[in-house]
Each structure stands twice: as structure tokens, then as C-alpha cells.
Length: 203
Image (cartoon, rainbow, N blue to C red):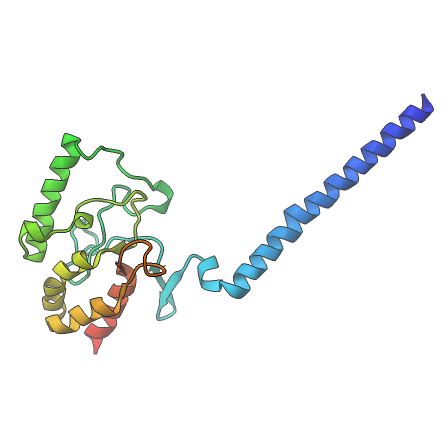
């Protein structure tokens, strides 16, 4: 009996020591190591890819945001507009509307949005690209297609007192190609583009 009890005590002590070691390694050492490497080698990405202007956070390159006239729900003509969002660009409420492509509600919403986008930018409805009237799967996509940026150029140029050529070049300079040359689609980060636009308009 004593021998059995001693063996059980040794096994329990060994198990407790293993628990303590693994808790320290996986609960403290590993997280601190990963955090340290992330901060040292990928500081910007590890902290949410926050973009600062004049020392203040203007937003994240990873999360879309609205560019409306202050205290209204109306899009501001001075800025390039992002893809629509059914979550209000809330990163805590991401997700698509989950409506199928043939759903009458989605079809009606897309048609209405196409008319609105076309009128806002002064272009024919046929020129309005899909990403201008449909949200992304996450509802917080920070990027738009070059085609959507292109139909906004004239409106943005007029609203900021710039030439179309200046704004078109700005879009071109801020258009990113496919990753590794073949993955994904060319895109424009709206936050980066609008920050550059603000700087250009102040010159």
C-alpha cells in the first residue's frame, strides 16, 4: 500500500512539474518570443498597419472606412470612396449580407447603388464596376479596383481644385499589382490614396 501510494505521489508530482513547465513555455515564453519577433521584424504589421498623419492615427491599411461629409451619411465628393459596407466598416461586425446573386433584394439594391454611384461621379451606369456597388465578404475591404478609382478621378479633381491629369497620376502611383505577379487583382488602397490626395491638394 505504501509503495503504491509513493508511486502515485511520484506520478502526480511529475505530472504537476510537466504542467508547470508547459504552462511557462506555452503560456509565457512562446507568446513573448512571438511578440518580440513580430515587434522587431514586422512592427507596422504587428500593430495593425496603422497609418499616421501629423502624428495622429488616420486609420488602418487593412480596414476600410467611410469618407462621408462630417456628421452626415452622404459621401464627400472631395474623397475617393470605398466599397459599400453593410456593417458600417465596423471591424467587430464583419461579414457579407449573405444574399445570393439572384436574390431580388440584392438585385434591387445593386441597381439603386449603380444609379447613385453613376450620378455621383457623372458617368454612365455602364461604367460603374461591380466593386462600386457590392460589398466584400468581410464588409471592411480597404481596397477598390483601379476601374472604380478611375471613374472617381474627375469628380475628385474638381472638388479639390486639381487637374484630372494630377489625380489620374495619383491613382496610377497608388495602384498595386497582383501579388507575385499572378495572385489576386490590381487594387488601390483608399486610405493611402486619400492621404496622398490631401497632401497634393495642399500644395
